[in-house]
Image (cartoon, rainbow, N blue to C red):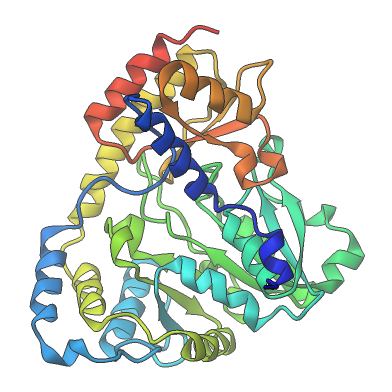
Length: 386
């Protein structure tokens, strides 16, 4: 039996490997505290669940959905973008629901990448950007995200021949894994770079509503001309604690949205309509849950950063996202430090190298664990000795 070459090139998915290690450690009887996966522990808001229950009883929602999503959902997404960012989108041509933003991210390279084409991918970055490029037959040119550049890519450092060959540019702010943020000025630079080299931009923005200390992240599409070159992915997962329901959206350039719609219509049957109804309830219902959740995450952020600094780790205080990106102590690699914490403290963190070579020297810790487990983890971290 022969398999596709891409399967041989495919590494184990990062979090699947982490889950395997956690299971093995628990099988030995260890009490694991995991800071690894960014999966909100706070439940989906009750009014959103109520909408799902009601919709699930309607036989109209028991049939195949349409790939482009309910018109009411597309309209609610457009309205949300206008209220949040002051941007107007045509629900018919510039909005497309997706089965979680990960699905849209995984499929969109098929719209732009032919075998041998180049995608510009941040490093460190969400692994799906590079894996989806590989599945489309493309190759990645990695853009280092360095601390001295505030974890923003330097477009001037991209070789001219690579920039001219590139078909797709990935951006992600607030950033996973570094927790870095970007403003309109940076997005304007990205638009200018994309226009100069005729590159499509995909901005992954699922953390725009997870922010602290009064900070309000921008949308890439707020930059002048952004709609001419790109689209933005967003998700209900982090905003409304709906990771398990798998729903998100792509918004922006009508031609790019149409291309993604055509790909999706041939590969999936859309989002279950009852889940679309709950998404409408999330967008149109009370929004105070977001501020409440962020207050919880901000308190956890402050406690975690204090504990890591007490260990001697260098940590920037994140303005947004669900993550803390910490430099490992001298003498350790990302992997060896993560392994040491697992062996000594039964604590799981994610090695920075899981997100790319430039992630070496860092580990990522998530804020999405219950307060009692967080406090137990902090107690162990404060007591750690080299």
